[in-house]
Image 1: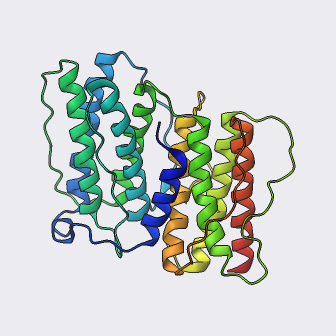
Image 2: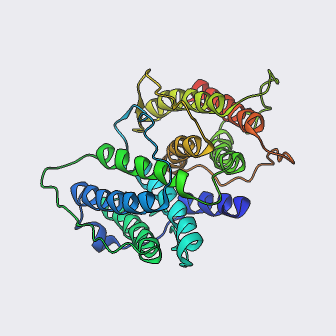
Length: 308
């Protein structure tokens, strides 16, 4: 799908490094405008999905609330990464760079810019497979929170999961969790006597994708408490988990990206140093190995909770 280790370090550096990012444009756009564009992209993608005969993902939404602008931005980056894979596969289009995370406050316009690039990629695909129908951008007048936009974006991500010729793999999820582990290690390096990267919990049997999904929701639970202690707003997660029946690595990647966004925001808020810990690199990566990596992350988060 993408070069795992290269992207891991790129996104780590991007979230901890300052960068000017179309500030003037960003300040003129609100979340209602972003929502309209996200729905236009979703409608365009639906035309492509129907033409491809790809399965429709109707799995229940993750019951989240109070999504932050950072979490929305990271999830939209993931959307663009998937669109960047689909467009070359079906249309031979060049990928659009997902960009670095803006320094300072992330604005709706920053998310809008990612969606514009994502829509352009999907339009390339639509043209390549002979879709002539045009999709309108329908403005929304009422104010909207990042949560409303996020729910559309994660729905788009779930549809894209079914449309990629090279599907998202356990290795992709492993690398996303490894990025979170790296952020957590940066935060733990600030705590005297803390082990930045603990060992994985003891092996307790082979695991399936649903097990990894559940473990990541456990990580989100702890992350919520960690963020509260640090005075940071992150997504709320209902006790009603809504785990899809046909869980795939794509579903898991979408959830793992939430944890990455939260830890990136916390690392910036606490001015955590950049560290590059030695991480386990199994020769073959299946759900069991991803589960073990998520176990390392869970232990890190529990340690942060004890120390903050």
